[in-house]
Length: 333
Image (cartoon, rainbow, N blue to C red; front, side, top):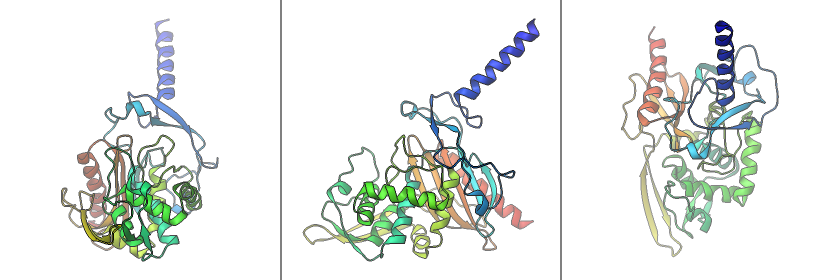
């Protein structure tokens, strides 16, 4: 009888764990289920196959996203997802939860950049609107543009990718599509074209919204597409950006900000044998600490590494370093 009770208790416990959280990311916080937006396609036998056959996978299942009320609580793990990819061979070398739902934070700006590179001349003039200069979100990172300021697409991309200015993201969205709403439609269309089928955008900057979500793998797809634009690679490699522009009265202004990556502003040391090209950071209460990076080993082989939903900068850059070091260890053998 006792043995039966123990078995029954174990079954109930496993059922409860299954119903209350992701089997890879157990947390004490409350979770809200979201359905994947992608097509319901069969799972391939090998999850670590090449990008060309893997990127159209859809997973019509419920996943776990923390609710807003739990945003201030400790994250359930040191990190929520990570991936290491050999760009030259389109291979996933290491991965953890890369197809689980996450909040994208400012890695959202990668899609904003991609659409801008595809649709604009970088020297096109842009006048900053009221909405771009009055975001109205406390604590949001702003480059500092004012209504009526006149700049260029190129400078807005630098402000957005290097310093992660949310005002620059709004300005680009309005310039590309005429309105933020129309731009969001383009973002989701482009995500579908790339095979980022488990991503849904509702804004161009990445500030937390319960209806905006992605996966680490989808962000990799977007980032990998951007590497085909030399201007993007050049911009993300900048340790700082200085932008000279004019205000509404025609007065010249100049602003300098440093790269938000703690590797590129020398807060954290790079592993030996690594040539860091650049990347995109992201940090919000729901997303945690995030970073996706393009780098090369001592032989010049290109890689992408990403860590999402880290619980601290130490955990974020520690895991990134560990993954990059694994490449140098392999190439030394």
